[in-house]
Length: 71
Image (cartoon, rainbow, N blue to C red):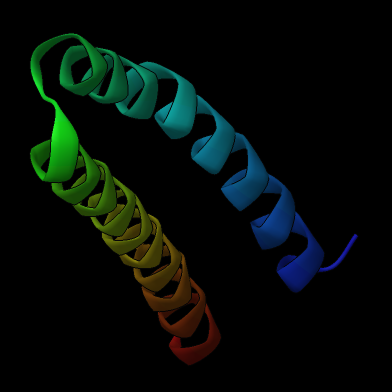
């Protein structure tokens, strides 16, 4: 396998684990405590945070690939 394929497989594992552990936990708390527009806003915030973390992990992998290609 080449590097992009490996990175995508790792990202799939990271996304699944992060969604189950953190996303499920946070969404469970929101479901139990919030109602109405507050619940919708919190769920959107959790989703946005989820994607920001995944983009951060992707950038870390990109940085590692750039370091390998330079040295």
